[in-house]
Image 1: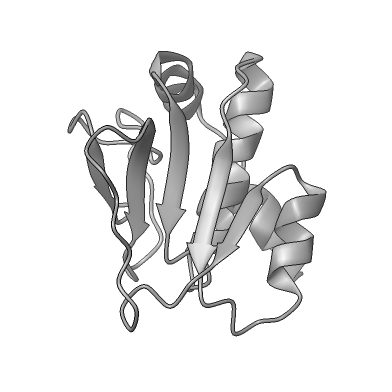
Image 2: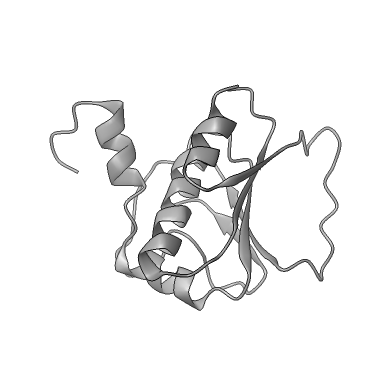
Length: 134
């Protein structure tokens, strides 16, 4: 991502799915629930997931959960086909049954980076993925 001049250009690069991202989305058995999507990397991760699903022609639901202190973010995500759930899950808790057909990805603040050999969407854990983009 050389010569990034605008926030839109940065977001375009961060949310552009790699071949590994597309392969992970194709292999996904179920929908994707992203907790904490209102954080620094969460919106990019949600956009990346939606773009990877669209690229591969899969029909996975991408569901984003956050407090949404940025009031415009739910509408921005909804415009891309990403479902949103407003919830302060640290405060109120969120009970996720083991039978729920979602794979979980938590966005953990970190230095944004990518490894070409590894999908930034999902790690190897079959049901819970702690996503840190490194």
